[in-house]
Image (tube, rainbow, N blue to C red; front, top):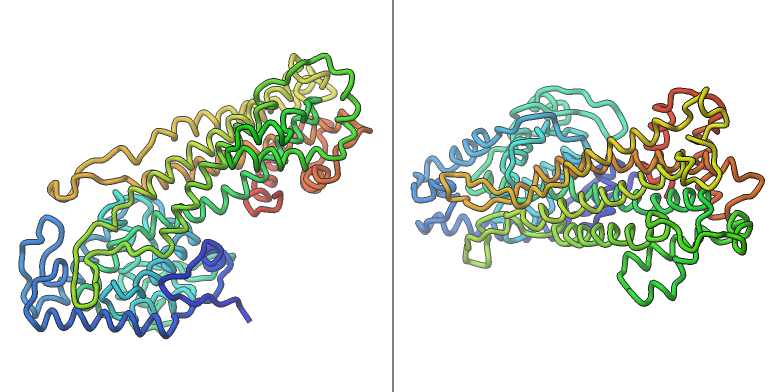
Length: 504
């Protein structure tokens, strides 16, 4: 029986999102949550019957909020909103991001502040379980009033418009029209009623889906980066003395202490360390070795900041206006500044992680700094180039990460006739941080390969058992370099393993 996640509007976790987005876990709507949502819907209907003016329900949107809409046109207004706002451009978002968006939107629509029918959330859940996924362009959102264009593309599929990708995670999808896919799945297109189009597109679910998956993957990368760092330090005959707990207790940043503890565990039982404990003429190692906990720890703290934002956003109410009992209040919870800032900071943290990994690769391949290792880690330097290009490729990726680190969250350009005069550019931050993560994964993969190669020249001495397990996984997929060969397949295999969390 597939794992099933019940949506309540209040209890979604990052693990839940990953299970649905990537593993095809089934989803169901909590009956209690559905009842609460339908009760808030009744408030909207009562207000309309009483002749109240409610933003986005019987008025225009944004700069057009002063325009009253006739009762007979209210449903047309909501449909027009979706059609007009489906204006995204660029490549489609990946399937896992779209599934995350659908899950998050269904979850928030179940909150009793939404004022919409629970059937909207039920429709999204039915599509998730049937593997019917809207095609959502990656670009075209400024992150306020939420992810208007991406969420409008998602809403298109609910009303039987636009294109969808059909298929569950792990299988190649089939692209077709939404109306056809819904019919094949036995799902009726939904007709949007008062407030429902607006409730669907006001929110941070596209940017939050990207951030949530990035946080999950960056956590795997952060832990794996310690294995790569430990391999390099061992191959370079570095000392683990700077990782002693006493040092880090005196500067008790969370990430720094966790990083030092991970490295201590990886060095435990090392024969290589014992071989040079008492006869090393160096007083101190270079920063890329000695300061690994301080550098990786800071990156880890950036990751934890982003994780805290995700934990809030997963169950946050981010639409507008909101229903409170018999009252409807307009606000700005749709503004993506918290998510945009977290994405920018996460990108900087990942770039920091990649940068220090590249510096250790340079020390491994450079005979001036490698403590007796052969040039470019080949026994035939000169005739062969060995891992020369591993460092060059890593340098190019780090340079690109640094260029991408310019914050998007401060790049506001006013929109909607200056009604939306300060916007966070969250999806631009998401777009570049996804690229930074992919680059950082490949740089750490390069260090794992170079570190494993460096350790070949320290044999018969062995690393400790914890680090040996990491080396063994690398060696199961990449053999030692004895003669020059194309390195791309090796890098891509290790990157794929790393991305799946197999090297954590």
